[in-house]
Length: 227
Ligand SMILES: [Mg+2]
Image (tube, rainbow, N blue to C red):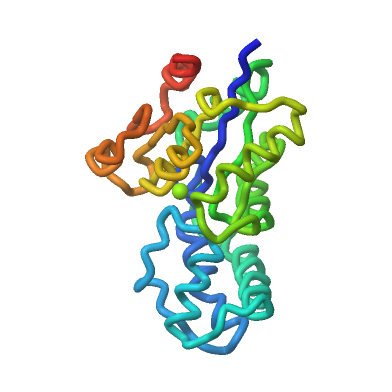
């Protein structure tokens, strides 16, 4: 049986945290080092948490040493934990149905390919009660560069399922051009969705395999598989 690997982005694709993630990120240099940074000067959409941290370090003239990154990540995670219940986030339309159906199909595997730190991904997705859908993932902990996360996800898929996935059976699902680029980097199929802020025109300009305004019609998502 042909098996499909669904590699999901988190922010703007599965959920919006109602700015909890951004607020936590903006607070974290002050919590870690006592210095404020300006997150509004960083285009963080589709980037990894570590990459964003390194841009903030540049602003502050801080070296991105492993110790500084560790402090920054710990501060971010503690801010994120506080912010998630204070902001009005949500799961996007159709996502629960798609995750549930995919989990029940023998030919689909749900996993994550996200710029979040693994612990940040767990905090966010546990908050919205969908963390249990994902068997494994590739995270910012694996590389600060999103395009390097595809090979990590494929390697982990083989380890966890005992099965190699050829790229034509892998779908990278995300809301930014960076998600499309990281899918193309491994020859995977790419599904773009406009729930994260990038417009239809912007996303189509990067030629994803498929495009959705949102996932409010889950059957259309499943019609795509295997095409
Ligand atoms: Mg995203």
